[in-house]
Amino acid sequence: MSTKIICIANQKGGVGKTTTAVSLAHGLVLKGKRVLLIDLDPQGQSATALGRSPEPGVFYLLTMGMTQQETSFINSWVRFSGREGLHILPGDQQTMAAQTVLNAQDRPVSAIRQTVSRFFKDGPDYILFDTAPSVGGIQERAVWASDLVIVPTATEFLSADGVGKVLGMMSILQSKKNWRGNLLGILPTFYDEQTRESKATIEDLKARFASSLLPPIHRSTLLRECAAQGQTIFEMDELCRAAKEYQALAQFVLKY
Ligand SMILES: Nc1ncnc2c1ncn2[C@@H]1O[C@H](COP(=O)(O)OP(=O)(O)O)[C@@H](O)[C@H]1O
Ligand SMILES: [Mg+2]
Image (cartoon, rainbow, N blue to C red):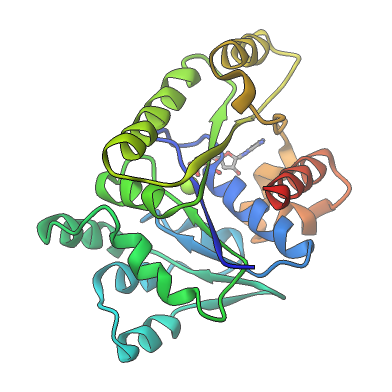
């Protein structure tokens, strides 16, 4: 199969983007796929969540050209996660500087698609982007680069507003910038049916985004502990509810 690119995006922080990126990446790998996770967030937490360190790989990806030499240099920053089939191109705070370069040079909206296309040849089945809440130019170019977008959203008040902003950006990219990708779905996170806020939020999301709503990921203590341990939810406890929920998400992605 050709490489499919999936972007995990939301303008809000703390909604489970990194958790979803890492869990989905490992979930797809456990289903026999090869995945490259690219951490476009300057906080570099995708690497940490996989037990590695933030590094400036993404800075080079975003600022260097397309010569063979540059490509092999960038490839030298791709790290094996220790899980067969799962690699990561880590980012760190230098990604902020890359953002400045992208904008100063007025790189087109297709810039990230172009620079990751170097990975297509003999490449992974999936490239996943973890993104930052609002690294302006990077987020837009990352969405444009993607075939599919997943929008995690915490089940708390006003979450629909954040989702609305991302969907608004996506529809502008489709209508004005010739973007060919699509929304894969909105993923409610931190779901807890015991709380009125969670239940009300799900109802609100259903009312506004009906068919785009994916089954929710419940609030999970184990999921919270994953990042600190540098382990994925499948390594912490593959039978727990959160593992099953992310496994179901991976299964859904496979069918796309
Ligand atoms: N379903 C969940 N249940 C409990 N804690 C979660 C869940 N999803 C994420 N977390 C925790 O919440 C915090 C924010 O999640 P994170 O994935 O880093 O969000 P983002 O990348 O959108 O900022 C992290 O500490 C993470 O471990
Ligand atoms: Mg994050």
